[in-house]
Structure formats: C-alpha cells, structure tokens
Length: 439
Image (tube, rainbow, N blue to C red; front, side, top):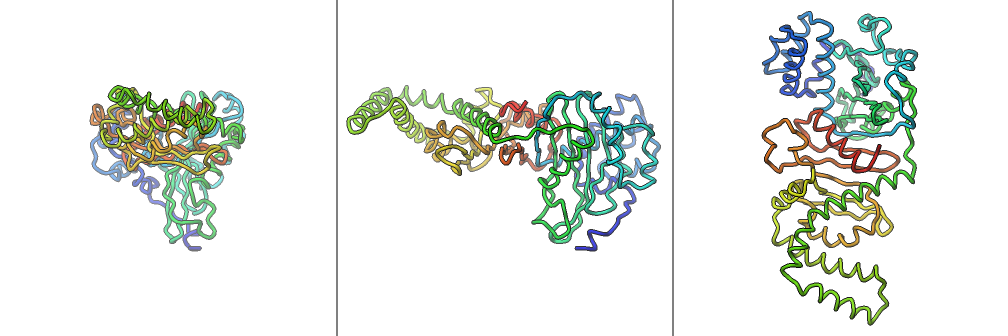
C-alpha cells in the first residue's frame, strides 16, 4: 500500500489512462463539429476510428494547430466527465459575480493550480494566460495529489478539471477525474465526480470518496476565484426539502387524479358511504374539519389503491405521465417531517411509478402532512434527456437520479451507468434546480 502511494509514474501519453472514461461515439461527433467549425482537414484521419487509442496515437505524432487542439481538448474533458459522472454536488454563491470580475482575482491565484507540475509541463503555459487545457500533457505522476490539467471558460461558466491518482482499500491504483463548474449566470457552483472509489478509507489516503473529493474542490474553487460559497443552514435546508416535497406531491397527484375520477364515476355511491362513515364516527368522538378530511382521503385512497394495483399496468401509468406533460415521476421517497423521520416508500424498478404500488397508497393520505422530503428518486423520460437520440423519441424508457438534501448540501446521484452525456446531465441538473427552487 505504501509503495503504491509513493510511487511516481511517468506516462508515455497522458491520455491513455482516460480511456475507460471516454464515450467514443459521442467524441467522434464532437470531432466532426470541430472539423466543420474550423473548416479543417487535419482531423480527417480520426473521424471514423474504432478505438480511442487510435486518436491518442494520432495526437501524439500530429502537429495540430493550437486553436483546434484547444477545442479538441475542451470537448475531451467534457466527454470524460459527463460520460462518467455519478455525483453532482451543488452550492450557491453568497453574491453574484461576472466572469470579468472573477478574472481580475484569478491573476494572483492561478499559480496554485500548477504548483505540482513539472518544468516541462509549465513550459506549455502561455505567459500571462489564466486559461489553459493541457489534458494531453499533464498527468498525476504522484499519488495522493490533485492535479489540475485544464481550466477554461464559456460565456458564463468556468470549468476546473482535476484528476487524482489514489489507492483503494485493496491496494489498486486508480485515477479519478472530476470537474468544478462555476456558473455565473445562476450563481451556482457544481462539482461533478464519478464514483470509482472502492471500499472504505485506506491508510494514508486523504481522498477516498466522492464527498471527500468534493470538499477539497469546493475549497479550491473558492480560493482561486475568491468567491464565497453560501452555507445552507437548517432553515434554508428545510425550505429546499419543502420545495422537493411539493413537486413530488404534484407529480403523484397528476398520475392518480384520472383514476380517482374514473373510480368515483363507476361507483357514484362511494361519496355517500364515506359521509355516513364520518357521521357515525363523529357520534362517538369529536371530529374537526381536518379529521373528516383525513378520513375521507384515507378511505378514497384505499379504494384507489385496490383499483390501480389490480387494474392499471406500470406501462399504462408511464403513458399517463407523458400525456400529463410530466418529464418524469417519483420512484422513491424518504420523508422528513413531524410524523416520521425515517418513513418512505419505493417502487420495484424504474419503470414502475410509485402509485402502482399498494404501499404508496397506504401512506399517501399522510403524505401531505409530512411537509418535507429529505430524499427523492425520479425517473426522467429519456426522450427529454436525450433529445437528439431518435431511439428514445416515441418511447417511455427512463433514467433515474436521486435528489438528496441533507447536512447542508444538495446532492444529485445519477444512476444511469452508461451513455451519459452533457445534455443529459445538464437536463437533470436544471430540472432539480427548478424543482427545489435553488436559484
């Protein structure tokens, strides 16, 4: 273990250890875009390759114009991160900043990103340039240290790409990239990390989990950009949980309401029976208006439960969600309220919305009285996540993500394992921001 931690590795080509993180098909699409944007033929030999190693070898022996190489490297960084990300941590800034304001502060702090680079690597930095992308030249040669091979921007975002070589509990050496995004248009900091960590904390290792990685990257972006990250206190955290709760209630209501109406239409006397029950109970104990409302909802929910669990198929409920204009539906809920601190419900799989399960209906009446949710899993329709993929256009397939609000942070856990991309990840992030009203 100690040998693995102290061993220094000299990579023949630094791009090889990113091979497992790259989605080749998506990257080839990006290469074609770069070729067309620059009206160049220099990339033609790699537009139809079958392996990422062919691109690596091409870059090693080909002189690529700097502006084209910069676009290529920026696209490669995003491909690596968005294809592999599983954890997205979100924080708000205490105040709004413009890119120009941040750039003035960066000049004095940028050296901290290159402090562990070799002299050869430093020679590649243009003098006075605060932005760079040297992913093809900077490697984590020493273990247990974070390297920053790229720092670049778009019109409103700053992207800080990092990589660490660390050791698992079993002694295996692994390389894990991450990216910190400072979004000035929304005053949000997002930290994207793939969960390639295995086991617990090995001796001598200071980054052993996505959260441990995130804490250091949050401090780094705050320091180099001189920005202040807002602390999510108990009051604000509860407000975010309430927003999450409200959104889940609304999604479930839209899924259930038509079936409830159908049931009442098929069983007209049911309302009369419910009123009789309330009146009879009211003769024994005093019932408030809220008590009567709860009784009515519980009885009706039981009837709807029997109806839906026996007469409605999951695929039908998925279609209902699409008909209602929902981008997705909850598949797991953990409550966080006065009546329960640990209660919850979950569906059997991503293709089964919660209302198809009897357990959901057994707690659905109390649902509105919990007030907040601390965790929710939502299945989003792939047709919205991947708008450019024709295979999802007329289908109800879904991809899931967990939303968790606790311990002063917002965490999105993207559960889809393969074929993720920037559009898909950013869609989930933007939907979560809207759901919890994070801006």
